[in-house]
Image (tube, rainbow, N blue to C red; front, side, top):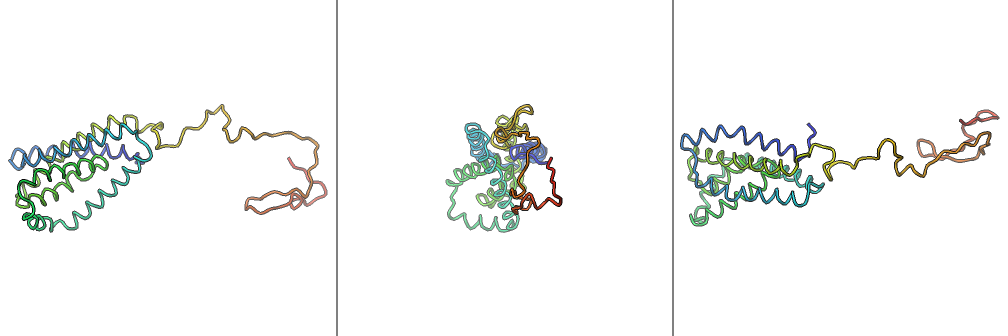
Length: 238
């Protein structure tokens, strides 16, 4: 659709929040959500999303931010591909990490994971679900599969929703041509001569004679003489 990065990401955030709401409600009704883990993730992801949008608002949507959004999207897609490729190994890795991860460390690490997800989802709209589940599995490898899925979806609804709302406040007119730094500057009005042509002029020299040895450049850049185009004794140039 040839959308600007921020518009595309904001649109995808809205879509993700709306489509996952039904799944989150269903899992919550069946008791498949570990609300403690969800609250810890949100304690990191929501402030991180707010801080990211606040930084974008303070600095303005510039070409640098456009490049950052595109780069973040590429990183998120790459991480998602890695997660999917090794999806069968995350639980075994989490079980091996248990000896170095006592319960006292899991809460701050869960919040830190939320921070990473909050920044990544705000900048790319990817990761709330695809990357959230492996992170939960690494920290809580003994969490049953249905609670893992329910907790992941429960976190994947408020995060994109809040990010979409905040992003909408930063770029309300992003689709317009005056979005700073992301579109070429507007040209001069139709009734104004461009600056590059202000020193160009045409003078009439009626009945003047041009020397046939005058040199010019043709369309290939080759130097040619005016006389090379004359096949008669009299050459008329209009």
